[in-house]
Length: 352
Image (cartoon, rainbow, N blue to C red; front, side, top):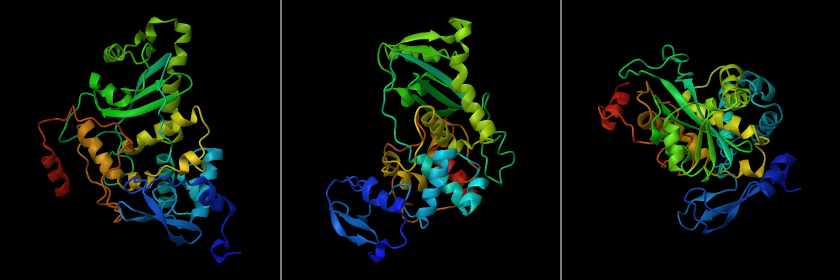
């Protein structure tokens, strides 16, 4: 046996030989690349456009992992048993708490993008959670209440918009604070088919205008038979149970990922070792720039000032632009508070 394949698990060998597909450069998306020697047990490639080299796992959830076999076991546990506590995962896989935390989020970021349209009867709900800075140890009351200064809100809640037609469910974190008509557009502008029937679960009046813009029929859930009303609140109740009790609360920074996990598991088997998950090429670039993405969300879609950004940095991607089509939030700049310029907000961060 070739020495490069010695002590290599069959699962890892199958992933690199059969599941990982190389169709373009993960750095610039160019389809002009050539084979460029080998790296251990896999083929290396070189892009003819940007000149960078890569292997089949570059940019995926396997990128830069030293314990790939352990990661496979970690993924199998999530596939078979769901999201267990980080303490439990740490004990089962014999890894550090931070590694268990990082791997979970890499797996959540590798979920395939949903490109399906919602047709027929569509349930639309506005699900809210209290803004949370859970995990930031230096922030007083980070788990239960928002930052008090320099902004004050009449309503300080994270707003998730949910769509479901029974066969498909999708959720987007769009804002912190009161919803406007424009907040529905970046989330689901092209998702709802014309002539669909939108059942307004939340009773939000602005959704009626959104339905009119999409040439869809609008109905308030409160106007229908009370006996069937409970089924329309099932998604809201299940998600709140999952976030608040099963996970014991989630930081706003990661709320979109866990809501996406719930939406995906509602209709499909969550398998991080499937081809659809393993071939997501923007996982590493999104994960390492997640703090910057969250910074943009906080600035454009909220009126919150972050106490501090994460101190962890990755030299390989610190100058890489945020990848397109891999944002974990739907960000709009329509409702930026004009009292504070971007430079003033940045200066506030720099002083901390």
